[in-house]
Image (tube, rainbow, N blue to C red):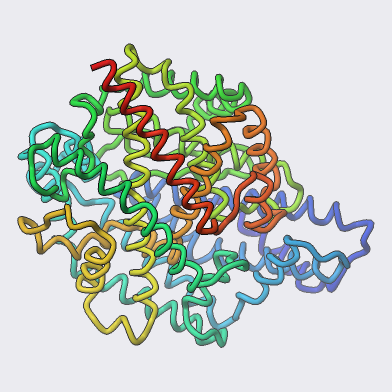
Length: 550
């Protein structure tokens, strides 16, 4: 256990401090940001441990101590430092905005609710972390993901249904957990006199530049412009599979190749990723090498390891940790490069003195990670033995990005329904199913598994862990695609703009950071038209090249 006495004594001292002299401010911020970084890293490592080993009693006990003792004290320390800093400076900028926002989020009576919220989240993580294949309890749920790429439809269908059977076996527990979280969060909002938890969640996420109406308008605009592209890809899939409509387990089958799930060994994944990063920028490659040397990569699935992937900042070590579940296919490269985008961003942000300036908004963080995925495409030739496979992989990258957007809007609007008292009267499954019908095309046929259509929300960890964090994926994806437009014409200049945006960390607002990168947070109608026309041209060119080879 970490030395709790240090943070406790620091809080006692800071509680008596009103303000400090301006010439002492840098030293004050540096000293206490370092202490915050140490405790933030301890909290993060505890979280990583329970994700890696959900059955480890010691890790779960440590996580309980973090939730009940460390995090409340750490949050108190952050409030003290923010309060004293605000009272000791005169300049107003984005970081002071964030600090004032942090102070407005505090209510003494919510401390116990926050502890309870963390415990409910942990209950969900433990529940899903222990799920296994219903037909083979030695196989994790994440291990089924690779079967969704199989050419044999019976294997894909079995993997899909087994995945959801595992979740359905715990549906009552998962539903009860989410209901308890909603009640807890609404109670937090009432104590802070917010209109509801949605308003509070936006504040917690640092969303100071847009609101719920902006999210809905963005979803509708993007859906309108991108649905034709999505339909064209789905029509290619139906032709490839010789079906009139697609089943839910068909989404990962490439219409361009029988071998998109190119076999990738763990060693190939490491070597190939490092080579791409070195070619993009040697500094990026060095960061990856250092993380590997420190043992900060956990890439393979196993029983009692959670699903999904993430990259967490380790501010005290000036490093990051990447967690993912590789399945042995080419997409492993994309996931690892995405998470490395976060790691690179952490490195740039950790150069800032003040802890608040190191905090990256989700909108910017996902934009950085998704942009790196697209930049890497110019270097994929190193991963393929023939040009045909390279072209197929690029087409598949565009297809999966476009296919992903509607799922973001479904989850985002589901969350808005959950925390809207008038809309959340219906069962969760019914709400989710209605949204699937709204945003999916008519080329998807759920008839064989209609009972699972509304149950997909159970796998969305964000609903439990970071509510209202999801629209960021779509905002970031559109911005990353627009940045890729620039990169195709001016790679060096675009990469420099990208690094300049990374270097801002949390010192600039989301729109300001996007502007430095050369894009906008909410693109205009004209910009969306320009983007879809660019994508059509890129896809048509790749298709022409593929046909010429065939």
